Image (cartoon, rainbow, N blue to C red; front, side, top):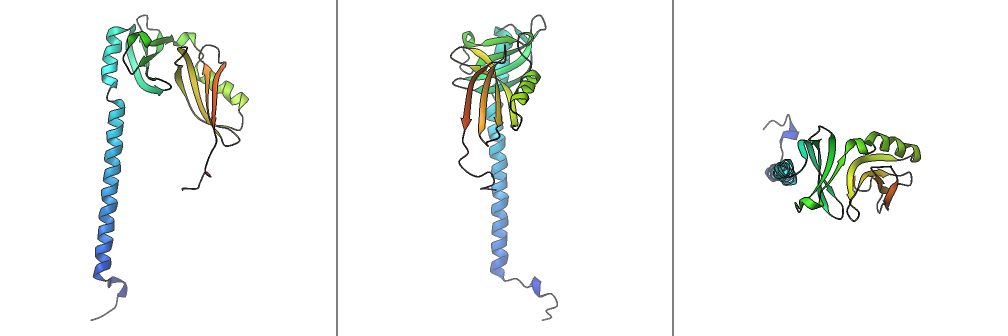
Length: 183
């Protein structure tokens, strides 16, 4: 036998092992994609029902988008317009109790851009992750939730009033592991 290409002579058991490993990797990828899609579908499954209930039972008559907020209680955050075409944000509880919902007119609150500018002024060496609407459940107080990493490497969740930008609550989390420990 002519061994011009010795690297093509691989033992049979190694070919089987490589084939099994490739199949396991493909199976794992398919499983991960399936689980991701199933989770996403479950996360947004109730949006259609909530949209119908809100349009039927509240003063919101147009819905632009729906998100979720999880504080002490969970709420659907609904961006829409009221009967007079005035933009509003509505916090609609997951328990679908209409009396616990809160509607805030966008003209009565500080815009997200203003909150971001004010935050940048007092936290110069920080990394902003997101600013989202929140509801402080005990007082039914609409707020902006600002999530960021400060200069000391702490993950911070800061809640400021939508009305005047005053700080309501601040929570900081200390990192337990180095940033690249698992990468």
